[in-house]
Length: 536
Image (cartoon, rainbow, N blue to C red; front, side, top):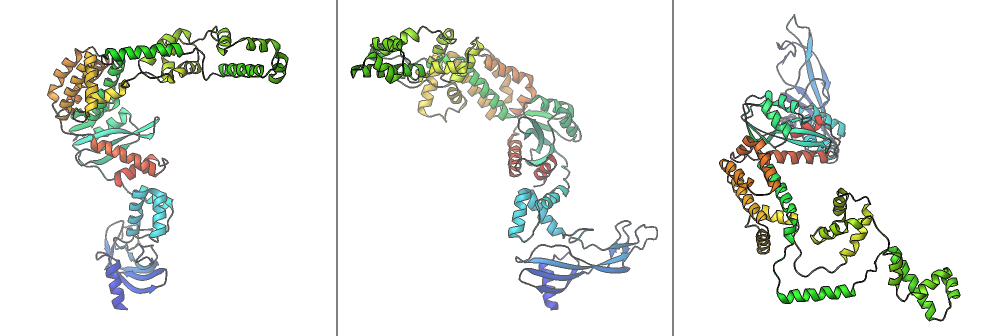
C-alpha cells in the first residue's frame, strides 16, 4: 500500500507540492485520496514569521482535477500553527500547500487554472458544457465566468510602437478603442469608448511610446497629439487606399456619360440598326401593358365583341356582363381597344410628365435603378411618389436592348482603375483602355492612381508632394478633395508611406474581438470582454 501511495503522489502531484498520500480508495466513478501536508512548518500570513508550533489539525476537501476519467475526491489533512510573534494580531493560522490550496477555497489551484483557461477560450456556456460532459468537472457557466473575471490583467510593460483603432460594442451606437503592440502583435489594453480624453489619458501613462500607428479619424489624431507629442504619428496605408478608391469612384460617376460612348460602327451595322428602329416604331403601340385599367379595357372589349360574333344583341350583352347600355354601345363601336385608350387614358396628365425627359436621359446613360432615379427627380422638385416613377420605367425594362456589349458601370470601371495592371485580364484591359481614350480626364486619373500605388507599395513617401502637385492639375473635383484631405494630415500620411509598419496586427485584433463578441452572443459586458481579449 505504501508503494501505491508513493506512486500516486508522484503521478498525481508535482514534485514541488509538499504532500504525502496516506490512503487510496477507488470506485466505479470516483477516486478517493487521503493525504496530508508534509512541510516542516509555515509562514504567518500577517507577519511572515516562520512557525513550527502545531496548534491542531483538520480535514479539507478541495475539489481537484479528474484522473483517468474518474472524479478525484481529495481529503487533505492540514495543520494550524501558532504564530511566534507576540505583537502579531493573528494567534493561529492554517498552513497552505503551495500550488494546491489557498485560504477559503473549495478548489485546488490547478482546477481553478483549468476553469479559468477554458472560460477564456470558450466563454461561459460552451466551457461549462465541455467541462461537465467530457472532463467530469460539473460547473455552471456563472462559475466559469467568475473565474475569468477574477484573473488580474497583466501590466503591458514598455511599449515602443502602439497601434490604435476603434471597435464596435454596439454597431452604430457604442464604440471602444483597442491598443495593440505592433511589434509583438499583442493587444495591450481595451478602452470603453473612443473619446479623445480617454485615449489621451492612456497615452500619457506611457511616455516611452515612440510611434503611434492610427487611422485617419480626427479623434485619434487629436489624442495622439495631446497624449504622445513625442511620438511619430503614422497613418494607416489601407485607409489611404480605401479613401482613394472612394474618390476614384466619385470621379468615374461624374464622367458616367463617357462610359456609354461606343466605338465607331460600320455603315452596314448602322443601316441595320436604323431599319430595326424604324420597324420597332411601326410595330410599337402606345397601349400600356401591365396596367390594371388598360388590361381591364382590353378584356372587356374582347368579351363584348365575342358575344357580338355569337349573335347576341346589346341588351343580352348587358345582362351577361352587367354593363350599362351606353358602355356596351361604346365598346361595340370601337373596332380596336386603342380607340378607347386614346379617349380615356392618353388625355390624362401625370406628376411625372415634366421629369420624363430627364428619366429617359438617365436611363439611356445606364442608370436603371428606379429608387435612385426617384431620389434624383425628387431633388429636382418632383412632388409625386416612388410608385409613379417605377410605373413609368417598367415598360423600359421590357424594351429590346441595343446590340453590342453592355456599357460598364462606374463601380466596375473604378475597380479596373484600382487594380494592378497585371491582375486585369485581356478584356478588362481593352475596355479600360477604351474608356481612357474616350475621356482624357479618366485617362489621367488612371496614371495618377498607378503612380500613387507605386508610392504606397514601395514606401516612397518622399515623392508624395510631387504627386499631389501633378494630380491637382487634373479637372477632377473628387481627386482634389482627396488631395486636400492628405494635406490636412500630411506628416502622418508621409510617415505611413515611408515607414514599414502595417495595420495588419491592429485589424487582426479587431477581427478577433468581433469573433469573441459573437461567441458570447453579444451579451458580454465590457469588463469580461476586456479580460478575454487581453488574457486569452
